[in-house]
Figure 1 (spheres, rainbow, N blue to C red):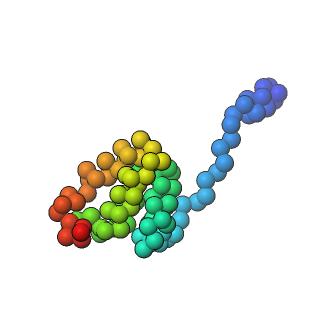
Figure 2: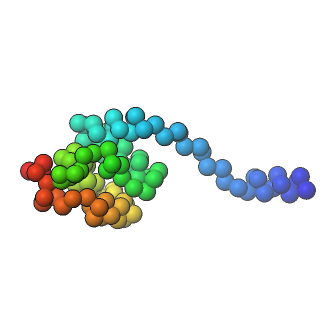
Amino acid sequence: MQKDEQGYNARIKREPKKSKFNFDILKAEATSQDARVRKSIFIEYFERFQEFPSYLFDNDNGIDVRLSQTIADLQKDPETSETMHKGIANLLARLPSQTDSPQMA
């Protein structure tokens, strides 16, 4: 049986273990003033969790400006996947209307 087990284990593709999730780093990068840093962490977060970290922003009175800018950057990027565009649409459906936001210009 041990030979069969080795054969089975050899056929199973081993995925590299993802780095441990660090909330403090996520928050710092997702709320960064640097749009490139925000976009990068949003992509990484989406690839890991299939959602965007909108909960890091105060969106009670409209969409946070940094969040809105990051969404717009992702929407304009031709490399943004269809799955990510669907994630953006789901996110926008949950957030206050962009036109209701006093922070939007």
